[in-house]
Length: 281
Image (cartoon, rainbow, N blue to C red; front, side, top):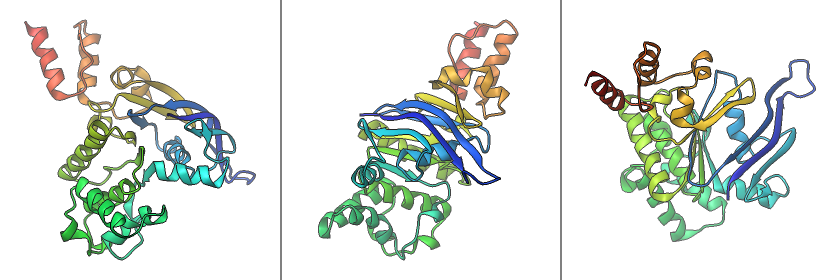
């Protein structure tokens, strides 16, 4: 079943002189198995939106539904949402708090009732899924790891809960190329091979433009665009908002302005190269 937001509104410091409305009448549906990218200018409400998906934030009005049930309708439903919708913060330090990688990854399954060998097995599988050798990393302190390794520990901790959805807030920020590729490849595998729904907030659409099927654009708390990834990247509003548009999209737009017909909707260098070759024939 999908995640559905109905008329969701949220204001930070509601009632205070410096109150700021961050989400305004947000309505959308996220279907099982999707890879959804979320973009928008800084301060547009992207992270606030993510934190509503598993109940980290409670809407002022409106509903967040998981399996057609309001996640805030009971403590049990909220607990279910936090198990099934895993959240990876932009800065892994915000969710790492134990003394070892094993304890960090084990926290989720232990909190949701697993014990003994079941926990060990869940931790081992989760660590190896994100490329962390179990025996080599389990006793290490997460605070001594590199930025990329911390991100993978945070992701392993989420996977150990066996979620159906993973919400990631700018997960590649600050990583080098190798770290970004490793993380993206891991999430791609989770989406393609395990059917986990991915909600990915980013300022760099180019990193996942060929992988994600859908793009949401939020501006000033409102959902202003929602469509297929390739179609939406070519929407002029994306450029008007100053968002990252992959170079191939810019090249394709430039060619079309000059009267050269680009048949496809290229988002990768390989794709735009082929389009240029086709135009020269």
